[in-house]
Length: 517
Image (cartoon, rainbow, N blue to C red):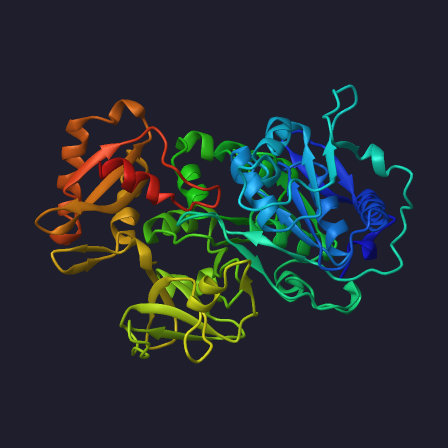
């Protein structure tokens, strides 16, 4: 499916919330075609990469579609990165072009200072010669950058003659080190002949009359892929310019949203809203929603189902696309905590020696039958993700039950070893966020002379006034009444904001470093 199959009716392809800016399917098609022509005339060919440094705005989908139908890799960059971090991705990806936005002007302006040509970057090369920036009328120009979309205004709004299917070149969130580029081989076919990104699932789950809500930043894998797949199916996508819990409820009510994709941290924040606020929005248009990206505490999901009904499905996957699982709300109620059964792939649970484990035993999760990929410019990491049979892992730990349902335990590198006992902190984190005064929590190991490591918790409270030693003591007692003693933190500290990505992944390394000193 392609967006050009849905032209002529003036139907919105994108509605930005809360600004209300609308881009119709006709406008999106024309914008993507003009930019595709511009890329070709600038010399970009199949396999080249285009870096995208944009917030959720009216231009970002056109840039992604232009690259995708030109046989190019498009590289969305996290807008919260520093100029130095963004410059690393631009260089590491080998991008031949970069498209930025006025809202991120400061980062765009400083990229050159940290590019390899300045002598501080990772390797020689410098910034791409083709640099476009989306500026509003009247805004000052940025030296060395061309104004977009003015610079493509004279390009044809019809498709380029040599359309080829491109792909997303996603960089990981970098929670365990520098971001890693995840690259798949291009199919070398026209878009019409290429398999849809997620067309089968979208067609099963939604229809052209659906209204899809995308509340997360589009520089992440799932939001970009899901929103583009929805558009390919003729579905209007409501894109939140920035997530906030009440604003999300307002978007659902105002635009009569039928479907959406969330992360558990969004559920937690919406549940912490006052009941009167939650009840003031009409959410009756919702038909089905999906969540993924991070494990969802069982109690949080139960509360969401109590609120929204049994319409909350879940999938487990990764940016590497090595395999996935799916579980419906109805199945989940019978198997609480599970992330479902595999879709078009096989799961293997392996011990540290690579032996398969029986149901009920936790080990590293490997997939068989997913897409092939490489970590760009990192042969060692690519090789380390495969076992001797070619099965692939991203380092998650879990187990399957007797019926084949997968349960996630934690990330391998998050495991705490205290006194020779393996402790997975996710269970403790999941329990902490169910406390009515806790908004967010992180549990990790810090050095201990006697035990090797000891369990540490850092908490973000709903009300900052509750961040006291007295409440820390109260929380410890509360945990010990509900959790095995060895899994309980030895101490609890407070932070005004935990370092999370927009998809809910914790930068635990920052906390470990701070509290290990």
